[in-house]
Length: 159
Image (tube, rainbow, N blue to C red; front, side):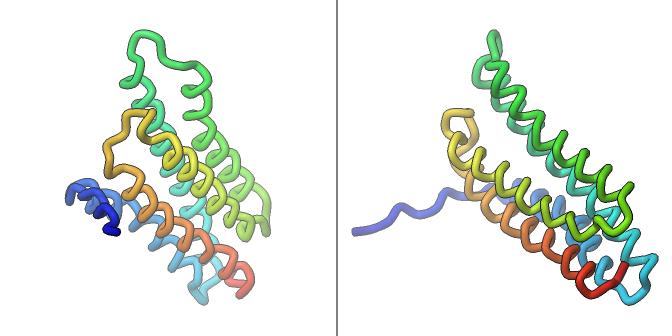
C-alpha cells in the first residue's frame, strides 16, 4: 500500500505565508521581554496583527466563494467568511481596552483553528488549489504555537 505524496506547495505561497507569520512571531517573542512596557506593547501588537491575519483568511474565503459562483455567491458563505475577521478585531479591542486581558489572547489560537477546520473541510468545494489545505495546516500550526506565547508572558508577569 503506497500513500499518495502530499501536494506540491508552490515556493512563492510557502515563502509569503511564512513571511506573513514573522510579525506575529516577533511580537510573541518580544512579549516575553523582561521590560514590562515593551512586553505589553508587543502583546498589543500581537493582538492587532492576529486580527489582520484572520481578516486576510476571511478575505481569501470570500474570494473563493466569489470565484466558485460569480453570478450568485452564497450569502451564508460570504457571511461566514467575514466572521473570523470580526471575531479577531473584537478580541483585539478587548485585549487593548481591558487591562490584564492580554493572557486571553490565547483565544486567537482557537480562532485560527476554527478557520483552519473550515478551510480544510471545504477547500475542494470552495475551489481552492489542491495544495491550499496543506499550506494552511503548516501556517496555522505555526500561528497557534505563537499564540501560546502571550499567555506564557502573562503567566510570567511580563505585563
